[in-house]
Image (cartoon, rainbow, N blue to C red; front, side, top):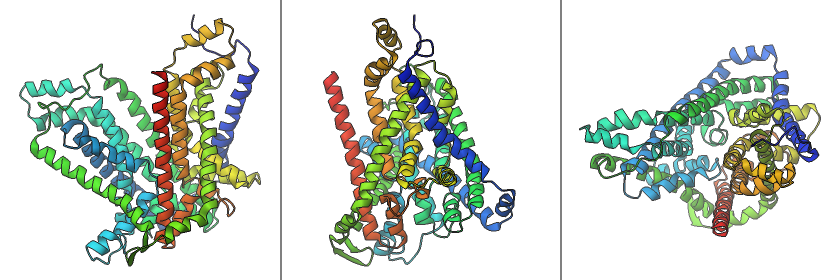
Length: 539
């Protein structure tokens, strides 16, 4: 008889681990949010909502988020349709381009945009000879679209890939044209992916910090204004109100997106019959030509962003003196402590996040311990709140407790900031492990702690590795939450790049960004090699 591991059989080690998980989640998720609401003052709401400045900031955030999300989804869907359905030439190459962009540190897009399209940009100044500034709404819009359209591509590509191709073939056999098939079959079946990607990107743009700080100029948005009010004006109550204004739509949009994904998961599921771009259903030559042009254009821009970071690292003075130099690369040595902090904090944070996510997944999915639903909700809280708000909440809580150890705070922010994704990855792996293995081990005299460590953990090793690598790669480039928590003794490379960019030192900013980008690629390559060895060992 199958039963979950839980209360009926005492296990002191698991009870201690369960208590530790609950305590950590309460300390890092629940208490910071409660503390930030305690900072609220009624007059601060009046200050915010009666101020034209703050109302304009809210409008700016809504405007950039809506248009950025809309354009990102349109381009992402077109890219996905071209690769998955239309059968354009070079589909495999094009499918790799968004991957390259998605795995780079988030601020690289904004930095490369300035190098390409700023006042001294390669495109605007060198090629077109224009003396223009794209700082502001339009620059921010372009930077965020290029940053987030890969997310729309992946969500829509998965949706299109899981679509039953027999629907389109049946419509074609009944005399429907390709354009009609698209609008009456493919597009309606794509709506779950389109809506999910739109809402997800909407939340991501609302909480985006790096791009607005580099590109937006005087076009202020909420994520940056929260930081400005706390550090520039030392007005924590106004900062908290702005944070709540940002929090409310983010939480609503996140849960609506999660509800839509869950609702349509069953309705759009297929048993076999995945979409195949057979010759009979392929798009027309005109459509494929247009889609190929769109994919080529976007791919060239993405690759140009990488090229600009590399070129900026070896160019004397960007846009003015193009002489080759190693000066900027050599200057990276001056930031050895900064890089050491970045890597070490990310490593520790990734390890702690992975362990916590694994234990939480075990207690929720493989045990009968109490507070399972509470753990499940709390551990996914960071996914629904902006990083700036979470960083502000942790900062206010620790300040009230007179705790100022920046190293611990930064590691904590990295650990909990990306834990929802680690939790989902490990939960997915754990739910594929049959519970009958637990029963068999128990019948042979194994303890529950032994089952967790010797059966479930090894069988979930791929998910655990993916969780660790994901948190490590994102932790290296994190900005929004940690910017509230760092001190002069704990510099981070991501924040140093932002400072250098604000000072106009593009060469050093590009060289430091290049190091972080290469480091991220090395980490992901190591993951791929480890997984390959794992498969070879188990085959």
